[in-house]
Length: 123
Length: 108
Image (cartoon, rainbow over all chains, first blue to last red; front, top):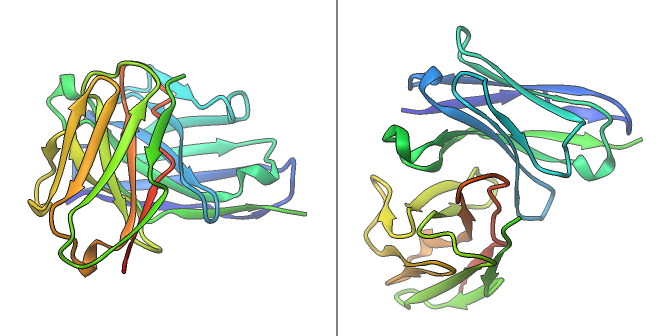
């Protein structure tokens, strides 16, 4: 069973930094792309970033490009999101999700989600 | 970027009713569309992938259809446990893998 547990959220001032972590278990982590998806309070879902299984490919939403960096450690079954130059509009619950790729014989899209970690950017 | 327009934004229906949600893509995305369910205070859950395939363990009252730019999600007989917000998401080719705005389903 897919288990994803995020950590690292909290209150940070505008312009500050935060590093989110996601611990994965219940599947072969190194076989899957992984993604970060966020949800501002009372709002819809926004895809933030994803990273390929071997870290060779990453991509970001325009809203976070140049400020956020996704990374992973397959030896530790862990996914990370380094968030710099944080803004009030980055306030959200951040979910990590297992991202399946159809060409790899996986269910495409986000077929497993963590419980989320809340990031609040406020002075 | 591909835009996803989902409608309605909310609906109220009675237990046993048939509920339909639509999602329109701003360009052809073939069948690269998922539907997710998010219950209050919980993480989203994948229900339908590739526009019409039911994820393992999901009740058969949920279904999806469509291809190209127009997609439909249906609950054939609404149950109290189906109270949630439903989102479509496209994953055609390159990111961003945009979500629709969501449809909040309530019981009348």
